[in-house]
Length: 606
Image (cartoon, rainbow, N blue to C red):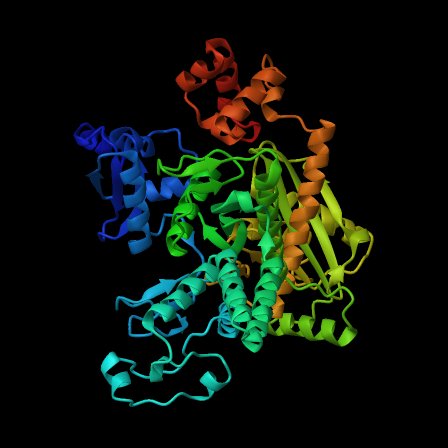
């Protein structure tokens, strides 16, 4: 849908709160969003202010818009989350987690059984959880079995069956793990008290359970049932020991949900701590995939709504690292600066950072410290997977870096025998390229590197990885051809997002198995060149050695150049602005200077 087409329907959109849905030509739901003012929000997608490629791609696909008016922002918030959860539209934030979580079910029956299940069915039973760890659930059930006498058999304990004497007590009764309801040794009321203790234990509220057993122990001692009192004393010790092992921050905190978030490109990592009665009873970290460069606040708001729904949280307070708009008036949102709540937030942040690093390390392979046979095996695997003419004992990788469309530099890292050879790392300050031109920058870096090796008669690498798609790979190949080095090395391109590998001239990419050692090592090399290039870039910026291309325009000072970059994000975007847009930003005189500078023909074309 074009901006002109949208302008025809814009006046028909309501100005009320609600949700909007975008559909493509095949009537597939692309995106669901919420808005305080539907007309204003939807119109913003068709304005000229968006610089995000993903948003541009979404708008290009829109063929039909539907909306639903709701009474309030809170209703819009709830409806948006419900629809995203149900339909999982392609351009919305997605939870990258297809796990099913275990529950502890209290079966709807006489003398209800308690057991673990992953299937939540609408049979009237009570489901506690879900829990993030099966091991944790089994530990809880073992703990409950040792301290609370609930049956584990599958007998149909209806009053009629018990009255007829159909059942006999089993070994669990004689071991003291069951009170024998099958032979009327236990009433349903007494059994119900055990279930209440179970619920308290699962909520981390062991106080009432311990007090109940203390009362029973005193009664047993008064009636001279010392053996029973001793058993109850052991249970109290067990409960108090379990309570001490629980992660208790402060009893006065009560119930709260704690969230921390870490953004890394299109992926956000969110750690969730569920606190009940001052005890952390659940911890969970998840990955969320963003699609439209959503603000981090929006990602966190969405994740909170989904996670609270998934884990059935009714906590009245949410603790977060920054201010968010959470449209549930009865929920208190806290951004702590100090105290116990800040400690909880720091704990969540520690977990989310660890989780991200663990995911990164799992995706990579580092051969430092490995024996020669392991290194050779991995390098042989790369040779076979990429069908290289020789084992890549010497690998080099190139990457370009720029800041907000300015200050381009290039970096190259070198791996020998599968490990970094840092003395061979190189940085390249761009010398021959004007402005931002990723392809020309890559060609310059590759040409300079291998011209130097050629002149010094140094050995060439068996494999050269160009971090980028077909365009960067083609530019690098031009440099190699101009040096007459065809066939001296194998060049491949590594697509930034999909991790596809391209060979020059091939239409189809090569996709290595996601968890293969070949791809893990290539990821390690790619991440190393990113790190090396970004470190160099930051150092250059901090030293003030970069010169913004806008500052090269006579009459345009540093402040004006920085103002334009801050507002329009890149020099490329500034070049595309109309004279009117530039005038609105910096005034007519400076706008004319900028426009004349960028509109002048290249010298080669004169």
